[in-house]
Image 1 (cartoon, rainbow, N blue to C red):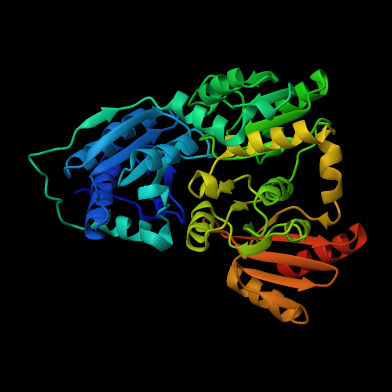
Image 2 (cartoon, rainbow, N blue to C red):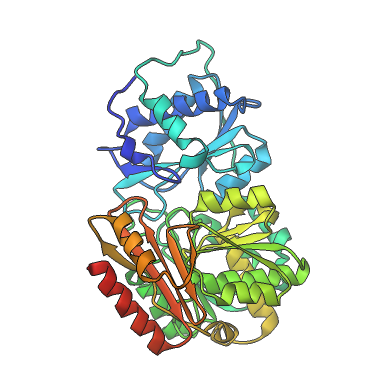
Length: 455
């Protein structure tokens, strides 16, 4: 039993840290054993099969050997699905009927990071609120796990073609016209999936950086940073494309760019897909999160749906959707969650929805988006503070005349503007999002809040 596991690698939604200083083979093996012990203790081990996938990071293959060694030592079998995206991993857990799964990935973090995403059967996420803390304590206990002489076995499966066929039938790809696309895979794990997918479409597609490379030589695997969209936007402007899409390192988030080379807000994509789903299934619940523009619940209501406000975070969003049978959900960060896929996030499926909308509307993407640009938004502003709780308390007192909600941090709503102020899960930061009915009011209230936060 290793005693050097750093509890800080256990985050709100996954396990993540620098390799090999914080996460290494010894740590991975102990966590693998603890994961199976957790499932056994909860009576969730089922047929004792665990799906394991991995991203393209240079340390992922070694961490695979280590964490599967821990799992095998507890008499569980491994279904090795190889180097895949996180959405394909979720689909594989559901399809195989496995007791759970581990995806080896650090998502959008730089190359020196790695980590693990865990799920139960049916790809239900395991977060700090639903078991990750227990796994942490099991892994850190000063006792040895019993090592069975009957270790499990590894079964290798290549599920890529079957997975893409499944998505194709769900979205009915013949409805997609021969649009001009630019897709940036960022040397992440999504490259091979996109390369195969475009063979199924009639689109004219230019793919950037499709070759997986764990060093991410062309740009970092975080599509939320504008510096990582430079190459995509250059291609769109040079080639007059209808749409650009860039994926993160493990392929579960997508950021969209219109034909003018302008980045599209993630909540606008939520509104578009929600409207599409509600046209087929009116009356359904749609989940959105606290940083989202007012135009999203307004669009959902106008389309005959029921808007549900929740906390951001992929594990939190999925668990809420499971519990309340919510048809669709979207995050500002580019995660999009679909009941029809098993309440999991799938960025490629979101892209197919957008292509379907573009094909039917016969308008430029910027024209489709124009009605959603009704309000003025500050974007997310981060502040490094000594006492985040005190900052939130001061803001609540200062803006006590508004409607106060505490779903995630502090949200205060007025008739013509609102803001959300929330603490970071991992850093000594507070994050501000603000929206108003006019540019002048947004700027006025933004400066007022900045002054308050900075003291």
